[in-house]
Length: 191
Image 1: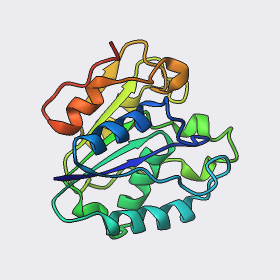
Image 2: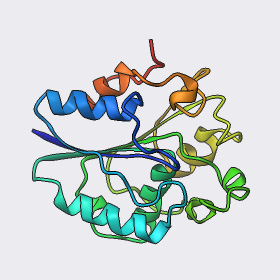
Image 3: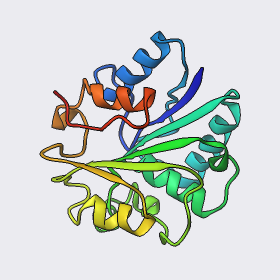
Image 4: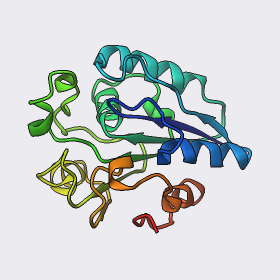
């Protein structure tokens, strides 16, 4: 059995039609352990509070393969946890960072400015993959250039996928389920 921790982003109240909610349901239905928590105050999140919650949720994952899927602000949350050397990330087998927003965008959003990525001068503790849209309004500089290249991780840049959220049509997203079940599966746009 694989244990999955699915982390939402800013202003996400885990609507049932979102790909993360559907992913959690599908993985649970397949018999996997899934933790898809509602993080505190998603409309005005506090980075330190979310880091504490992340550490707690990682500690509560059962033994076995552990996978984290983090979207938007939670992708940055993951980077902060690793940069700070917090307990937990080194016990994860693989990570998918989805649509991390850039500092230029977060600078204009006081609710999440603190989430701006730390200096990307650290090594991630395990296999990490990034996926983002080539037209993500939250990362106009490009996720490959901003995050994947500095971190030295593979990136799947999807054409016309926006922020990989409901506004971009990402309710159902079979490719992310396929990646969860097989880390070699390609991550493609929704069909």
